Image (cartoon, rainbow, N blue to C red; front, side, top):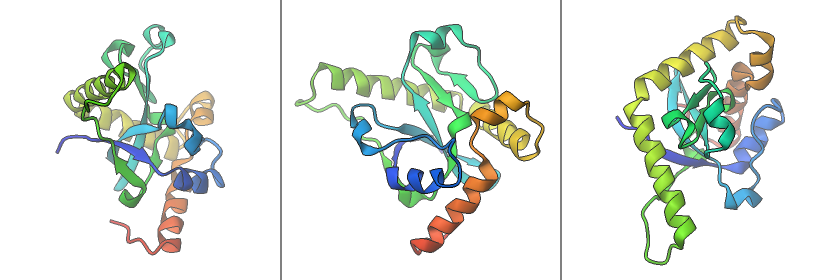
Length: 173
């Protein structure tokens, strides 16, 4: 099954941030730079792994267990350190269809998203393997301190995800 791009509900992220300050801050005023990511299954949980748009520094940075450059950094990166467990009801599929009313920047952004998604699908197995490895390192307390500092606390976030589901009457898959 191919990966898809999603936006994540800002309220859900705020709920997680109450217990883990490493959860990215994504209030809705960031609508000019929306929080977009892919959905991965890691250790039996659905995880939202955010993408980042391309920045000059990405070309100089190295791929790491928690950071994957997309097309050598040309199209951005995947921030596995910021992946969060998620219930599908907290996701909205990204519409990349180019419309006649779209201006030049919207068309460029949608093309970037399409390129990112295509790259992610072509490299899905490697992405899943890195996400699983990172998860095992963090949960198994086998990660170096700098990595632990920049990663979400996956077990705490999973507990909060379950609590969120109970609060909102959602069934876990």
